[in-house]
Length: 102
Length: 157
Image (cartoon, rainbow over all chains, first blue to last red; front, side):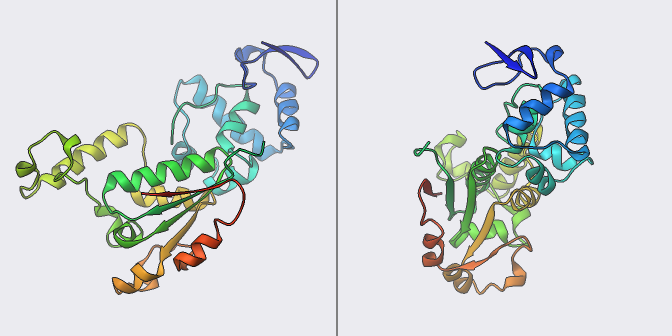
C-alpha cells in the first residue's frame, strides 16, 4: 500500500514498514520517528547507520547483536527507542522488521 | 486498545535449561514489543540466578519423551552434559545468548528479576550468592501486588 510520508508517496506494508529501501531518506526517517514521538538525535542516527550497515550486509538483527555492536548498549537502546526498540528503530530506518524471537 | 497485554509476569520454578530459556525468551520478547515483563525465580528456578550455578544448567534427559532416547540411556553418567552441550551449540547458531548474558540483556531492557523469599530461605542462600542484576527478594504476596493492574498476565513455568 501507499502512504504519504514527508510529502512523498512511499510503499509500505500493513505495519507501516517500507517495502522499498530506495524510497527512504533521512527526511522520511524523521517523519516516521515523529509519528512514534521520537525526536532523532545524533545518537539515534549512529544506531540507524549501524542498522543500515547490518541490513545491507544481510546480517540478521537481534538484541544480542545490539549488545555486541560496540555502537550502543541495551539500556541506552531502550531509552532511545522506547516501546519496542528494534521494532521502532527498523521502522524509522526504513528496513524490514526483524523476524528473530531474540 | 483495552485488550492489549501490558505486562507479563513469569514464575520460573525449574532449573532445566529449556525452561529457563522459555521464560527468558518470552520475557525478552515482551520487552522487545514494548510490554513490561518481570520474572520471579522460585524453588529450582533459583539456580538460574545463582552466580555459581547459572552457567551449569542442564537439559533433562530422563523423563523427557521429546529427547527420543530410552530413559535408561538418559540416566547414564554424562548424558545430560552431552545433550546440554549439543543444545547449547544449536542455540549459539541461532544467536541465543548464554544464561548469564541473557540475564544482563533482560536487566538492561528493564525486565525486573526477583528471587522468591521462601525458596531463598529454604536453600539457605544469601543475597551475595545471587546475581548482581537481581532487583530484590520478594514474598509471593509482594509479587502478586506487582500484578495488580489491567492487562497483566501471569505465567508459571
